[in-house]
Length: 242
Image (cartoon, rainbow, N blue to C red; front, top):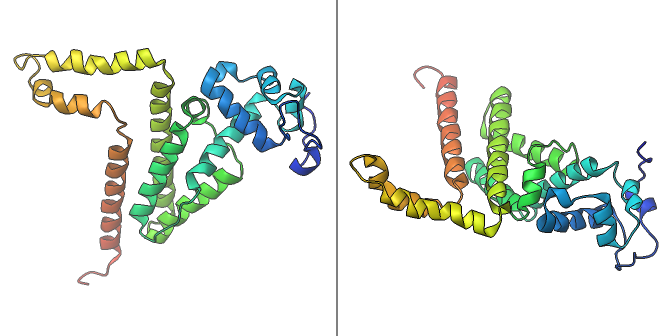
């Protein structure tokens, strides 16, 4: 049975652990992110966390119900980092583009954590604030509520899908990742125009783009589509002859 959860202040250790860490939810999350970076999801365990923190592994359960609860906290942490330093401009297209790029980057700063948590719903404060902010941007832009919700889901799911995809690539061993990229150069640039005319005509561009994420392009296309939709909605709302 999971141990009873208590608020962060009462459960904080009065003295540092052997590693000099004063335990808190945040300290455990930061340590978990380091473990994920070095060991992947298989390395995230109460035993490893305890060793890294210099505390008994059972101490984890004073702060989280278990590793899955910690995973949700990690997801919420990455969402929160996406908004650090962000300020709205009042231009909905620019604001959503900036949030998408910042969110994608926050996940890719911790690719193993991105793979682990991108598909989860945390239900925590940062996620709730993000949902409310994005919906607010869309509603203030003039999208009806039903459309705003659909666009919110598409916007977030697109970013998370690319975060998981790009995170999985970054989490590969360096030699495997480089081998995959080398195939674009060694294989696709050698295909003859007689059999693969379109690849032959664009091989240089394919190689160039293989070294970066397609997310910025996909995000721009999505937002341009949303802008075209808004223009159609505005036109339909205008009185005839206006």
